[in-house]
Image (cartoon, rainbow, N blue to C red; front, side, top):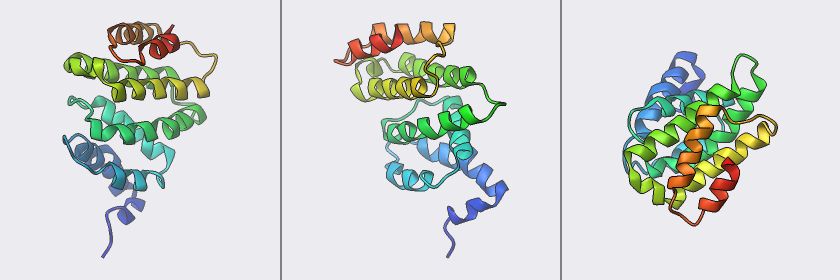
Length: 165
């Protein structure tokens, strides 16, 4: 019996897998599939991770806390892929992710008190800075990050503010 993961060597199946199936599973509240998906993603190409993260950023539904470990994992391979692919813009990628953080926090005000959500943002900012230490945040994204940091009600607020300013 062939698993779905073995079928991803076919480009058509692979595209559907990263662009449709995985985002669908990850958007289900309390999906409890993160560990299983992470095992698979660790063997995935950075371009596939990028496809998945971009799709997750474009979903109307907010990211579930079950998905945070997958998102945290995706940041590094995606940034590695963006930094090594001249056709991709780090600014566009950064803006896409920050906009999703912001829209989720506006949809659910409890995220302003969530240590896990705040930590996810901080990890993204630190990863981004590791790849682009001299690149300034895009102006609109910087504004959104400042707003997120000011609204934050966790013990990580000062750390978050220091990264944003």
